[in-house]
Image (cartoon, rainbow, N blue to C red):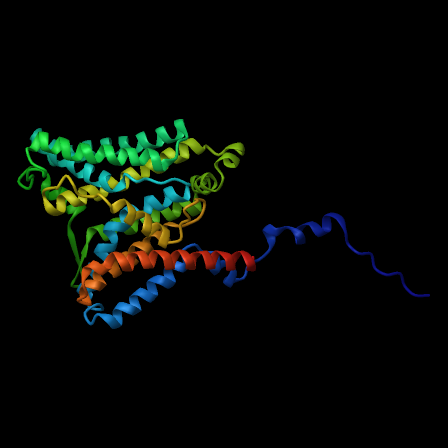
Length: 355
């Protein structure tokens, strides 16, 4: 007589093995799932291209110039990327940077106050612009494109109109001889020397912002809220995500980045032209998209936006070092945007197929 067949485990015993949360993903799948993968490939390609196209590209002085160019874009690209992950846009970022610089300069000059007073007033008013965008968006539920386009036009007019009324010209007066200018320049526009290499302080600001933003996205509850609000705001709201507060916070973050960039603009050149900044908002968005952020929201990373800004810096300066006509810069930037978008789409498709 043969022994009975062993009983087959069933019921709860199969539960843990079938739980998808316990499935171990291979390193390849994890790599393909990273939003910045396409940007990394693009950055390597651009670096190798200009290494051969421009003899001076690999010089330390050239590389630090590239980093500086990337940092001036990257400081804004980081909060813009977080906003895009949250499912929104801000078309007023370029002129908001100029507004921040103008407020600091004109308030300090007209009030004959310590420069730091103007810097503080600029922070408050710049944050007020971000708060205005966020509150209006969440209260009216109008598209962020429309709301921030209106803010863009209003700030453009205010920058030019108020500067002419207060200063009599389209630029601000010099504040280089005012109290506090040197210390403010050290914070926002100084140059550090490390091992004989000159590095602009904006590079440190940029790295710090990327680190903080990455920590927020990957290690905090607020980061989960950002992804949820950008992926499906109604579903996120239904499970208790404070979508309204999350999006207002993202606009405040963009305003903070505009303030930092504006102070760098002011203390680098002492005076500010009121018409500057128009068009830069597209560059910030391009850097975020190249870095893997989706136009539809819910996907992306702060590191990816940093790599997108780095591609911008390498392209803008690489063309100069290669002694090409700078008119080609916009062409290369547009081509890089399309290629990066197509590559990111392919990477995401492959990641979904192998998941």
